Image (tube, rainbow, N blue to C red):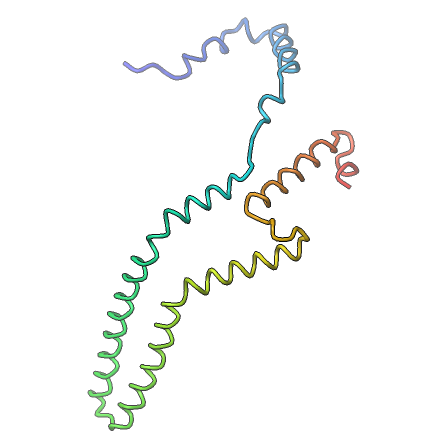
Length: 174
């Protein structure tokens, strides 16, 4: 027979602990509890390390995913070409219409094939350029990294919490 998890908390549920002196004693003990011991979080380079580990693990995925995506792309392109030419054949289109449709299909397929093969390079270039824009806009130079952004957020939170008061929360935020 399994026991109820609340039975483990029976010490807190007994009636004599719900009295006023026990609550006052608990409040006094909580006031002397060391809060600084729980605030020791080291976030230095935390996200940079996680990003580096992910990039290392994902380095081998790119070629495999590109190979599978290429196979899927050419399979779908072949199906689309056969369907398009089949529709033209059933309509008894002229040879000029076949060539026009084939030229249009080839150009569009080539463009999207180019996007597929160069997409990862474009994505990295976009990310790098956005990071350079953020570095220049923030005035931090080239030191901006994901961990640095989170550290700035923690610094801002710490300043806000230490400078705010309970009695005038709006005034202390200004």
